[in-house]
Image (cartoon, rainbow, N blue to C red; front, top):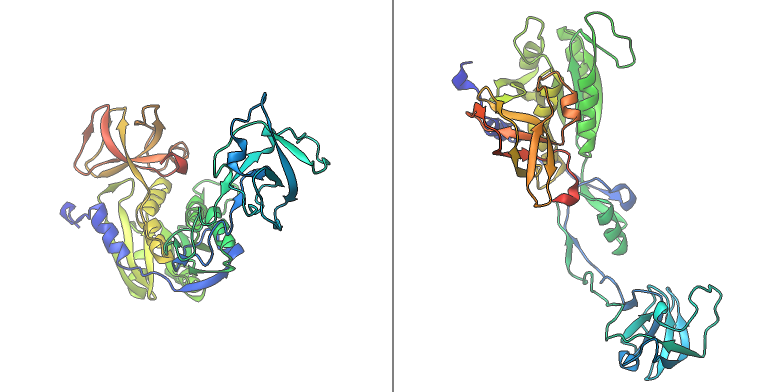
Length: 421
């Protein structure tokens, strides 16, 4: 493969995504729906709130009766009853009358406002206070004060949630309010994770010369599970065709939707992945014009999509971010496959080798809304702490070799508070 045969990142990504289809749907109980992707639009059967109700503890009354009321000139109203949340006041309120009301209780017929208990003469600190005959109103309120009107949040027949939306706790709350006990979602992708190499040992073992712990398997499982997919751990395949085939067969038996492996996709003497994959499927071995990460295996094994990532831990995680993450989200039914990107001012001078480069960076937001970034230090593909320190990946475009300080660049916001944007 010549330099001209190297694939640009976007071209490689398009080829990867072409392998994947959205998975079938299923229905799950509401209390198991968080983190899943909604498979159908949700149309409200009811309005929310379903009835006019009070936004606070106080007194329901006619706003006109509070005209001119203040601490020095209170207005007295006759109390004709009270209504708690979950009950209904039986009667109609008239001029000069008030009904004590609790937060969430239905507004009595005839009332057009609620005054908070603190603006009355009632000793609201006394939890055992009896219902008074008269109440002193010490503030003026306008019509609709503290009333939450029926349908002010949403109305029956309105589309509330669209298919492809990730279900968060707030979506669960809305679905519960609408009386949706079963939720249609896309099936969770099952991703088989496989690490290769005789040098790898389990994390609980002591290091010995020539051995390293299998960090990629754990990191990729965490990346997969963060997307709401299911990580199927297939273990470590030794550098023999037999062991690799056995591990892959275990994934086929587990009905995985995708294989992801790390290492063994280069041209080393012991990289047995090439031979096994090509004999068991249709696998292409690419070099992508990106840094970190360059070797990538893409195709099908046993009819199942396969992504072979580099072995260096940072390269594996960044390659996962660019290729595996959007593929998994596509299978899961998500509409948006991309993380947010923002323009940042990169404060440092930095060099690139001409490939599209992802600089592990610390991104900071300033009071004027601008974003600045600095690198996390050593950008070697083995330096995992460079990712630990980072909250974004600053992109140096392909072909740019010298980046002077204070250059505007795009950044992938990998770990940024959602509320900021």
